[in-house]
Amino acid sequence: MKYLGTNALSVYGIIVNISTFAQCCAYSVGQAAQPIISTNYGAGQSSRIRQVLKYALMTAFCFGIFWTVLSLATPELYIRIFMTPTKEVMEIAPSIIRCYGLSFFLLPLNIFSTYYFQALMKPASAFVVSVSRGLVISGFLILVLPVLFGADSLWFAMPVTELIVAVYVTLTITRFTRQLKQAT
Image (cartoon, rainbow, N blue to C red; front, side, top):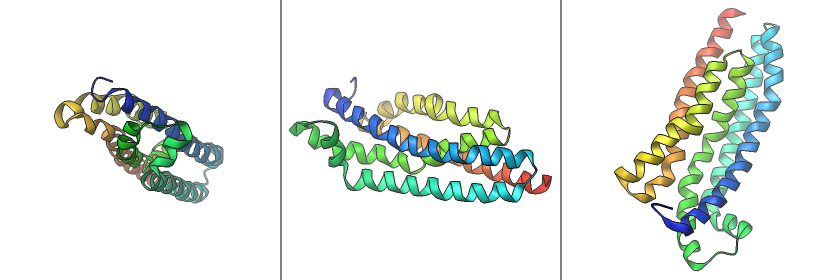
């Protein structure tokens, strides 16, 4: 409201709903993989863990592609599903949705990683990802981006957040998976 007004806020409400769908897809990958990974972790079956990890990452990647492409290609669809838009909303909504929609590419990886870390008994890493995505990095960017780059940069807070978290996630998944190789 402070930077962009009520029309942008109404578009943000739509984005939050779409983000919930994208997140649920990511949760499904984690919820399907976590019990298999944790059981095999307990059994010392690192090759099985790597196989499930491969499938989970491929699925997360597919969900990321799906939601990102849908957001970039048809932002008007989202608007028309959730509201009868005014002319003003239709003028601003596509660019807002396209900017924010970039976050959907890495969102499934980042959410899945929390399940992976929990299954490997690495709760601190899962906590870092969750709090970084949901509060620390995103909150910082929401406060700083509009001041430094103008109000419209606000829509890049989540894509940048997901990118920063994905770097940590990729490095941490790689490290923990390599440790499995050494352990079994």
